[in-house]
Image (cartoon, rainbow over all chains, first blue to last red; front, side):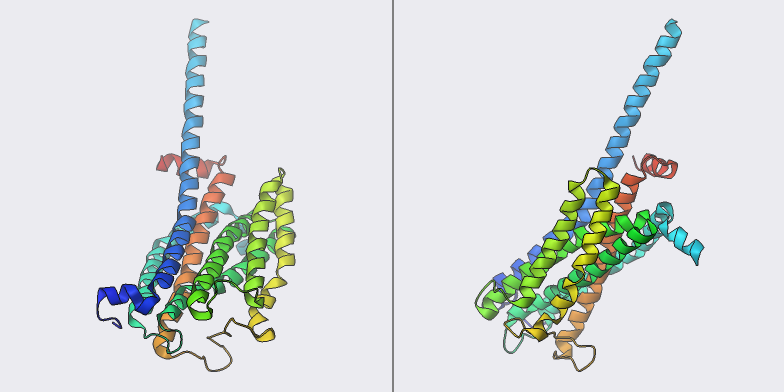
Length: 69
Length: 246
């Protein structure tokens, strides 16, 4: 370990803010890059469920109709 | 050889194999990133000239390297799509454009933040920085161009052509620090001669470069997998996967 105390490590002899802002921005962009496909997949699943519900309800209606006839 | 090539173009084959790869590559990537970042931030000695601000190198260099090699990947995928009309190559090209835009932005941002304590300014219109900014515009241009077309087949072809033309920028970025000597320091790691960096700083940097390459592979595969699911959503195998997960 190069730094002796935690505040030393955070301060980094005055360069702390620059270093931490860079690392925070990197973490944020990496998070967005990972989260994007997860969100896309979730939306697709929801969309498919909606389509299935619509199909199921329209099939239900048509079978009712059949019985009426 | 040709059966392998056809397999490679099959979205289902890609989806299955990438799922298996991600299972072990994702944990390795996380581990490498943590080890490299902790080593670089807390254990590596400070630079004798730049002090602690140089610790930004552990992210700046990996993301900058990837912003360039990611462009090659995107352009090659574009060429494969143009020549063989391979669907998966088109997906790879579009996903690589997103990844590239994110990483190029980071390279510019971390570079600007690093520039303030080191050069005294956030921004200079230096050859390396300007050409990297052009790279960001190329990535964003490809994303925007694809969205601008209603006909996605034509959109993919136009994007592939733009990606290939933009390749001319890559060697310019790479060589800019040697051709136009300015504020940006020359490359730290050299393949042909001795690197100008002490081993105690070099090992964490090497780990971070490997870690970011792994991260790129992981994130790109995740993007491609969800894009494949979207474009193949009407097929039976995708329907089965979606039913299992819902």
